[in-house]
Length: 262
Ligand code: PEP
Image (cartoon, rainbow, N blue to C red; front, side, top):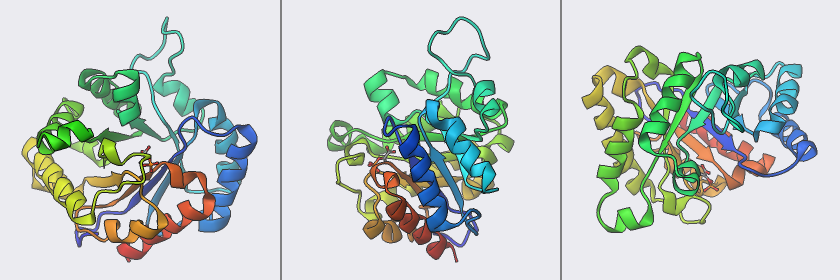
């Protein structure tokens, strides 16, 4: 965590897991472990679409500041787009943050940078926070393309995003080979990637925007490695998959984020 005063952001990406009952149990467990109003940190949970209302009603019942997030969105406002969900629909359900371009959307579902950019713009135009996910595959890493991939996905993902709107962008650097694999980037390797991504943002905007934007790490972050990762100067939090499904583990990671910030 740097001296730049960036507020840490920790998000739990629940992916396509659980059911209505377990989603409710999980969010109650998270609130019980971290408190309804975690201080000095932004915390978000990203349940699957069908459980947003249930989780949202528990959050608002507890008057919690934990943000309700969605795992995806469609860029069109309404119409004949079977199966898709708009920004307005998400807002109607109490959502305030959206994951965009998660590697599973890019590499399993096949989203390209243009699609990701449309979703970022729609999310920001709808007044929400966009968590833009980027990161290289193992093949790209082994071919020495890590920096080029991160630069391209950052540049294209942020196309036409204004400097003012960058306050509502969080960039999640998630090396694809580290997601759900138990392999984590070393704090030094992750720091190196984050610093380069920050300099890409400086080139696209200016030094001030780059200093303010939060760049979080994702990829097998767990209670036992979170502190070392988030202590790095350009790592401003984490996007957590597997470990976010256990309230105690997610809470331990949130506490690590609070610890490095204070
Ligand atoms: C993710 O899906 O964004 C993620 C980081 O998953 P995991 O923590 O399981 O690697």
